[in-house]
Image (cartoon, rainbow, N blue to C red):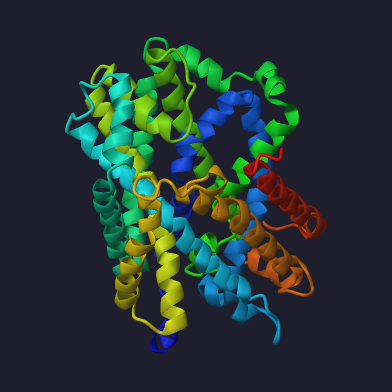
Length: 462
C-alpha cells in the first residue's frame, strides 16, 4: 500500500480551493434548470426563497463535508476510518459515496459530450442555416440516435478529465480549474451583457426578476417551497463526498463555514447569471421561454442564436461556457474517484487514472445506448439516464447528506464538539453554539422530508 504512506498533496492557494469546490458544484443543471424554475415559480420571490434554503440547508451540510475531509486528510472511502470510534460502521457510507460518484459520471460525461458536440456544430456553422424544426431534428437524429457520435464525444471528455487528474492536484486539477473557471465567469458576464442589451430583452428580464405572486400562487405555494429547497440542496452536489475530497487538500488557515458561503455564492452567481442569458434571448427572439432541460439548451437556444446578429460567434461562446461548466464538475468528481482508489488500493495516481479511464468509458455505455439501441428499455417510463439520475439525485445525495449530518452532530458519530472545533479552525465565519440544536434536530428532519418528497414526486405520487 505504498500510495497510502506518501505525503498527501495540498492545494496551492485559497482561490484554487474555492474555484475547485465551486467548479465541482457548478454544473449543467445550473444553466438549464435554475433560470426556468425561477421564471416558472415567481421570479424574484423564488430567488429569495432559494437563498433562504441555501443558507439553512446547503451551507451547513457543505461545512460538514469540508470538515470531515480536512480533519481526516483522506478521501471519502477512508475518512470515516480516521474519525469513527472502534467497531462502528459509518465507513459503509464511504463506499456508497464512491459508488455514487461513479453512477453520477455514468451519465454526466455523456451530457458533457453533448456540449462538446454542440460547440463543434456551432463553431463550424452546422446549425446556422437550420430552421427551428431542423435544429430539433438535429439533436434527435445526429446526437441521441447516433451512438458513434456520443461514443466519440464521451470518450474525449473521459480522456481529457483523467489526463488533467494525472498531473496531480496542484499542477493538474488546480491549474486547469483556475483558468477554466475564470474564463467561464468572463464568458458568462460577456454573453449576459450582450443579451440584456438586445431589443426586447427587457421583457425577459422583467419575467425573470420581477416578483410575481400570481405565478407563485398558480404553481402552488407548497410546490414553490419544495422546488426552492430541492434546488438549494442539490445544486451543491452534497452527500457523496465531492466537497469532502477538496477539504482534505487544504490547511487550517480559514474556517470552513465562511468558505462554504463563498462556494455557495459563486455557484448561485453562475446559476443566476445564466438566467440573464436565457430569458433576454428567449424573449427577444422567441417571444418567451417555454422550454426547460435539454430542449432549452439544444433546440431553443441554438435556434435563437441563428436569428441573432453574430449568432454563430455568440453561440460558440455559449457552448464553450457550457463545456467549461460541465468539465469543471467532471474533473472534480474524477479526482475523488482517483484519490479513493489510490488510498484504498495503493495504486499510483497514473495507474488509478488509466484503470478508471477505461472503466468509465465502459460504464458510460448504458446511458449512450439507452437513447438508441436500448431505447426500448424504459421501466416506469424512465430511460437509463433517467434512472441513473434518479438514483443519484433522489437517493444517494439526500441520504448521504443525512449520514454526514448525523455523523457530525450525534454522540454516536464524530460528535458536535469535534465538528465545531474543526470547522472553526482558522480565520473567518464560525459555527455558533446556538446552531447545534438546529443542525442536530431540524436539519436532519428537513433533509429526510426532502428525500421522501423527492421519491413521491419521481413516481408521480405527489
